[in-house]
Image (cartoon, rainbow, N blue to C red; front, side):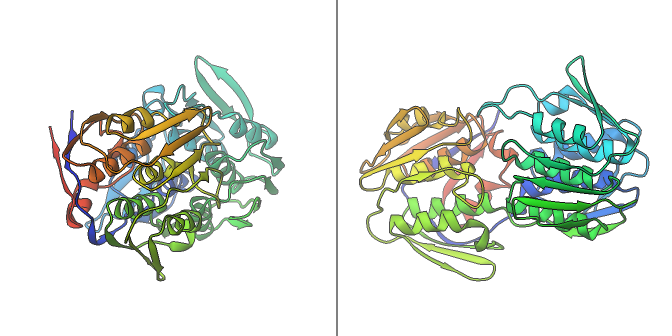
Length: 417
């Protein structure tokens, strides 16, 4: 099993390029199931979750090829196995995103229930409720969700809670439904907008993506298209926080500043200097950092996927900072590991109260989930001495060649087997 060895205490400086967004790429790859023609997707990050999704689509019968520029061509002309097995879904919960496209185009889908998740419950009931409203029959058979429909019908669907994958699944399903569908209380994340733009390029009629009401007029068929995946806003934020926490100066290029407004506001509150351009963000730390309070919430508010990373910054900032987690009920598992490095953090229910310390000390720590992994890497970059981060297979699910990118901006970090 791989681990990372980090020699900390060195400010990060230089320029780093951000990869395509995993959370945008996964549903866009599933959109290929909506047409028998070829969908070409570029700027796809080379990540374990992307490989898993391509394996799943290949098992169904989708023809997949990758060119020298790492653009992926997907042709779903002959989908022979409209199924996502438990072995695939337990590895990556985003596999549930095949449900909507399969039942919309092929009239049937068999997808395993996701099971447990390290950071908390992620129910799929909103996906099923929406498909039933569009006329699908849903049954549970031996741990699988089985959906059937001759052709879905447009419907007005109000989601009981904001769900990104639920919004994406139902939006994809509605593109081929007969009539108009309206999704109320829809997720507003940029990744939802990116998927909508891909679907529109394929011939879908969608309006309102990026707001809480999305309208989809169903069409008879979708066609071939090309789409470039948006940059990863969470990877962008992770590099910015790492630069700030180490007292460095880093420019992140290939980024979209408008997708990170809440994170940039909180970074400015800590006392670092932020400059932005059309496709870059520069962070420069000078002087003592100030701890800040923040609360996670659906977009456009502070993202839950940045909570762990920002908490590291608070551990070495002056004063007390409170992180309130409102999305997942079990997303403070990194706290115990940060305390091994010398952080002073108290957990009270869904709040983590951080008291700044002069410095962290290197130690061996263990990652528990994707974003916890990123927080431990940042902590290792800040800490004096050597930090060993174990179980980094979590990290490989969402960060493309992170040790190589960090090395380019001055980090002493290496992967060992």
